[in-house]
Image 1 (cartoon, rainbow, N blue to C red):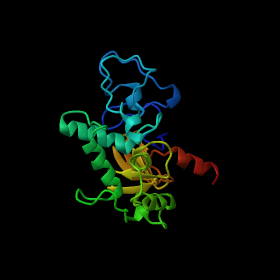
Image 2 (image 1 turned 90 degrees about the vertical axis):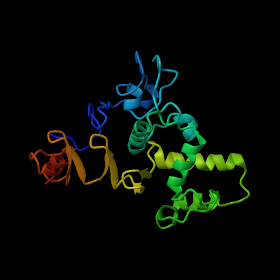
Image 3 (image 1 turned 60 degrees about the vertical axis):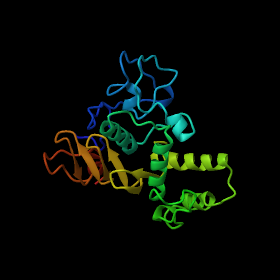
Image 4 (image 1 turned 180 degrees about the vertical axis):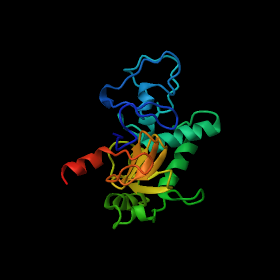
Length: 234
């Protein structure tokens, strides 16, 4: 039986990373060389911490705490993929502490081009009340000219957590689709390396996503766990 998700225990993504199911509070690694493809922390979209005993650490997610402004928040899978792709393209790891990188990512979330004044209230669908009440209120707060530097930094990091963090936010930014997505409708398949509709599931036999969680795979005829559940109650 094929599994419903590309995130299953032992699944391998497009970078050859084997993902494991683990408690983030106890996550640690003991890499003997650089923390890259096989690092336990990186495989789970997290940076290394004081619990780790790795040497020559090269985990590109080590600056997530400074980037998000809070500890214990992993990157969401789509953001992690962007970091790895961007690092590969640049020929060097993405520095999440860089002002230029943060400005680029923050403007991406806001839907701003490089010349839009950064303190402008965003007007995209994600910041409309009918779409996301929380982000609508955030946008009104962000546009206040009376904000202190500390208040503005806190608001900025709040939106970065919402868009790029893997902490259970109802919405996330999809680099695959270049816009915000609701996590109940869209999920990022680590194996295929793309964001998919919730109706799609990853077939381990064919190693690709198949449409329709209640239908057998159109390639091999295998079924998802959700398909088996629907048969039990039919």
